[in-house]
Length: 104
Image (cartoon, rainbow, N blue to C red; front, side, top):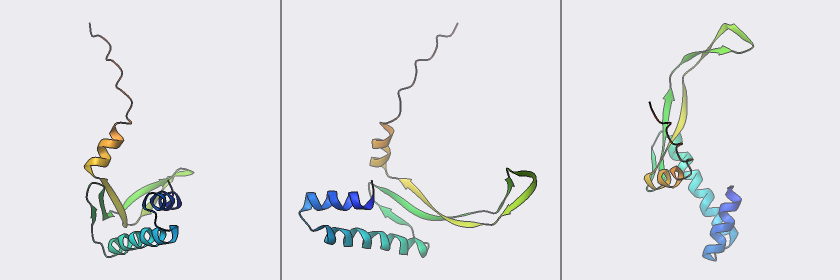
């Protein structure tokens, strides 16, 4: 689903213009980005939590020249933890476990 798909769907369900919905969606995304840039946590109940974590420095390997180590500096990244309702909806997509073979 793209932002455009989201705007069209909300617009159709609410009878608001696509432009009005686009402005609200874009402002929401801008505020989330702004909060994360300040290292604030963004918690959206029943959806999930966005937070900034700092990944520590480590040593990587170049697959084309494995003998050479490549230092990777520390870096801030955005982590997302899905909320309970989202987790439960997605877990339903898991394939069923195969029956365990009988043990002798």
